[in-house]
Image 1 (cartoon, rainbow, N blue to C red):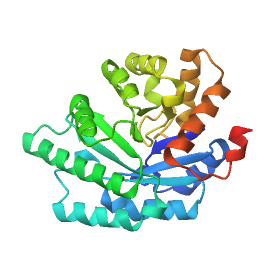
Image 2: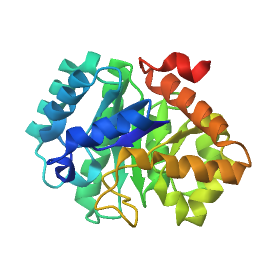
Image 3: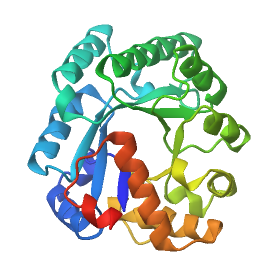
Image 4: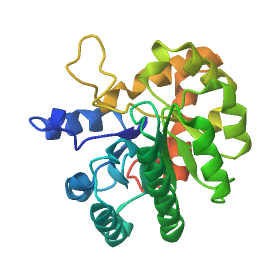
Length: 262
């Protein structure tokens, strides 16, 4: 399996990050870790260099940071992302968050930042990883207006069942995480989305399980198992197809590719 979205830079992993990565190597083919704040870019890039062909990086600015990050910091982050263009596989996560951000002025700043990062993804020819919470219609509208129909767009942890057909029609993918255990909407999204449009993720360190202090990349087996149940196919089929989806979407150069297609 491939965890297509987690956050290895987070403070929860500070004490045993390497141990968790080594445990992940026993079960996973690859990890895409996402630096969502400029301060975490260097650590994330260092992880990809230390664990080549296993850890891959997406770099972006999470929309919830809009009130704490300055325009100068945004421009510096974009410059840093461009400098590391050959060391990353995606731009993101980026998008809109109206759940935590209520102020109209801050929401407008989110839109400006979102458009900047879409432009950056186009310039660098990288896929986009999208965060959208309580802002689905506007997020989709901006993506469409920016010419992202039938481009490489991943709706990360997507849960808005009402518009899943729109996402599919636009040629975008969705990633499904451990939340599928508790959410009927996510289970219906898994049911209604073709397997070749689904990626697996954990968004760890969040979504920890009952016996865990925090989530880990190996939790990716949870959505894998649940999707197999819902679609009434084998676990191996879900694993193989979602792995291929991730490899194609992110253009991953992983060591274990031959095992996937054999």
